[in-house]
Amino acid sequence: MATVVSLQACLLRFTIVFGCAALMLSAAWEANVAALSLPQRKLGVREIVLATVEAWNSHRLDALREFFDEQVTLERPGLEKPLRGRDAYFAFDSDYLAAFPDATIEVRSIVVERDLAVHEFIMRGHQRGVFRGAPPTGKQIAIPVVEVLRFKNNRIAEVRRYLDPSLYDRQLK
Image 1 (cartoon, rainbow, N blue to C red):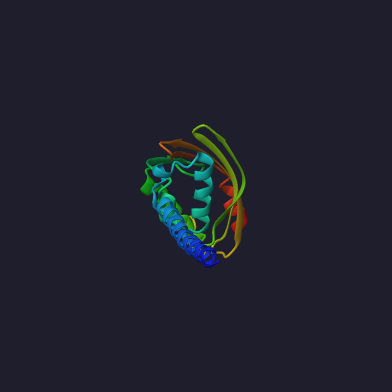
Image 2 (cartoon, one colour):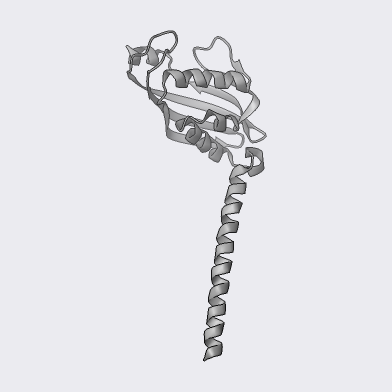
């Protein structure tokens, strides 16, 4: 009987020690995976689009930058010429978030084909800062947007954004 109790106690200690070690290894593994850069994680195109939405909605532009190629281009109505380069792209986004500090994206659909994604969403926010030279109105916008994203080396290399810029004027009056 003493041998059975001793064996059970030993087995219980092993289970506790092994279980704790497994939990610590699991937590360390998850932390290391999260710390890996985007190319090391090899996320799929759809996962990258969803991660950019999450980063945008939490206004973490530093995290969002990771998903974009250094030479990314942005084309959209209202721009005289395409924006070129990650710094120019994020200066544009920073200005937008200064005007609409509560801006969020509500995803409607995402379609992926090889290195392209089409992303349909509603951009929402309240104008609390200067936007295109106009003072804050406090009014809310809801702008439908479609983006065509082209990927290169697991990063967004080209953004073609389609929206009606006149909706801003109509909704902010």
